Amino acid sequence: MTKYTFPENFFFGAATAAYQAEGATDIGGKGKVAWDEMYHRESSTFHADQASNFYYQYEEDLRLAKEHGVNAIRISIAWSRIIPNGIGEVSPEGIAFYHRLIDACLLHGVEPFVTLHHFDTPLHLFHQGDWLNRAQIDAFVRYAEVCFSEYGDKVSYWITINEPWSIVAGQYIIGHFPPEIHYDIPKAVQAMHHMMLAHAKVVLTYKRMNFNGKIGIVHILESKYARNLDNPLDVLAAKREDVLANQFLLDASFLGVYSNQTLDHINHILDAYGSYRLIFASDDFDILTQAAQYTDFMGINYYASHFIQHYEGDSLIIHNGTGSKGSARYANKGVGERVTHPDVPTTDWDWPIYPEGLYDMLIRIQHDYPHIKEIFVTENGIGAKDIINDNQEIIDDYRIDYVSKHLQAISRAQGKGVPVRGYFMWSLIDLLSWTNGFNKRYGFFYVDFETQKRHAKKSAHWWRDLSISKTIQ
Ligand code: BGP
Image (cartoon, rainbow, N blue to C red):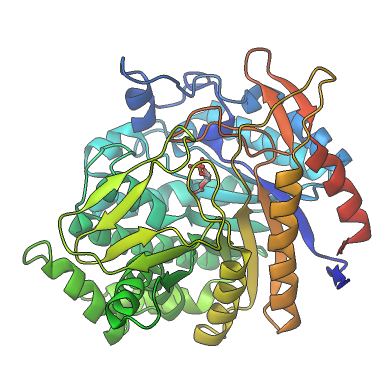
């Protein structure tokens, strides 16, 4: 049996995000975000007011993390705790909370990787257009400067933005994130460009401030395969989805320019939606190019890959937000349609389980962007309806299997020279899932959302052993 061994200094991490974990949405002067409004509509069956109560229980969660071999944690800072309306006064209570949280991470020996934006733009800015509004870029830079001045001496790893693609896909294509707009790819592309600029300006700001830490960005990167490799139309559809979801952002953040091939495909997609063309300012590419050189690492979130076939017709997306297997559809005009593959299993939420797609993506990144010095797999995991039995155990063998297979893919890529320095399981504790609520669980620790009591799952015990042996069979 092949053995996969990880280096001594590898980060065996786990991830969280402020809005999904903290709760305390109206505590400490926190400003509102668009999710608060959406979840408090009558039709919503859940909200984030308590979430996993991390705001109050982070000490316990960090202790559990440490005890189970988790030596790094992704946390995010809620912009609206630091600057409640996004542009005005800084909140001393918000500043103090993240000092306490970051200090606790360091005290427990759990390295904090801190994200500045994880899907939670302050409501006031959201109402002014969110990332479609270029003016938000400067507001984000100011917020980042505040965070760097406060926490820059303590935090060694910063992440500017989490998953620009998921943000715009949710907001403007699938329509299950506020403002719930459907099938508007032009808006999605324009907002991504603005996020890339915001990321770039924050990287340059951080470097100007002369800290010793590192800064990077997290992209969700799912491989896109033609369903039928012999059909050139399927091949084209897969390429188009790849450019839209992956290559556009990779080019911006790691080359500083959109290649001709990228722009060609983007323009073809835009043509299906009218005459829209991406709007740039004259110095955008100087900023992107400079930042690309100074970006220290790339974070990859990876859950699934997709098999794509040619698609004619209007966009049609049905989101499976309940875990009733087989209910999803995903077809975009001008791009293609995702279909199942008979050899590839899926989760109850219809996400294909395909570790090989992570391996392929890592090899491709190394090939196309060889100057990237360090890579972290910043999220990977499986959402499931975990059951707690009468003995208070959660036997999540499917999670151990999923994580093992993805770690094997990472180890194989390391063997080919891909510089993957750490892995973060999504998630440390069960959290709010943005569009699925609380029954799609990902954590090493089961959260009873009634009592907020934590229970270590079988996977947490397995992780402790793995963090010691550093070896997967
Ligand atoms: C990523 C996000 C996370 C998390 C995860 C699981 O895209 O960065 O915040 O939610 O996906 O997704 P979901 O909760 O929709 O299953």
